[in-house]
Length: 320
Image (cartoon, rainbow, N blue to C red; front, side, top):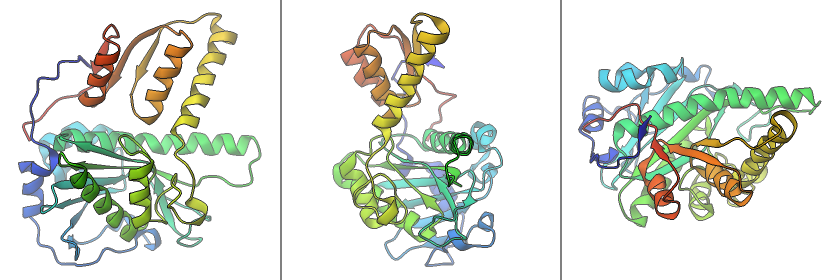
């Protein structure tokens, strides 16, 4: 972890030479993606595919396929992951990735009672490098698997009749500087998720209700947390409720176990972290610092809270 010094300049992921090299090294032999939710073994992936929209989609079965430099960064958190859908649209200034760390058969699925699913939100950024984008989506996708297992243990402990039966996953889109570019990226990601079936998305960084609605309208059976989603997946963005519950847990620990309010160091300033930091300030909790893996949200905090120690949680950088 390094102190915030936002001086590094890198090409955005969709302009990355490394990304271009990966796509230009394959032959696109298919024009439609399989429904991985109903495959016998989703780890088998799919052939390089170019959709009618011009979006190109690859299946990455292990980190080495992304090149030695990037593989060394993400191998520890790939952690036996099922695989990754990597996609781009050269005409629309955007690229994206869906990392599926794990998948389970979910009897409640809209795709059928024997369908595989992985769930985690989608992040959207402008200007993030290819290496940083992949490191984010893999790290956060991996973290979703133990999250679902802990949730299922808690549900079972209180006698809830159903469990989540979900594996962990995450998605990211990196787009050009305009809202039109972002819309291209969000719709492209939804197109891929809708076709693959296995991945269910939800709100994450830089995806407010309007953007989530655009995604859910294109992939209504593969998004939770939007009024535009289909049937049982329809709902509201859960980040505020999650943040309030977690913060209440912190309050209880401080009151009943610690007997005071020690300084809190917040790691992450996304949909949940942002609400928790605001709540801590409202409740006069001391904050010792804040870190994130992306520079842009920290710069906003720096402007509004100049005395708060900020850190960029970066394992490294790359030229592309």
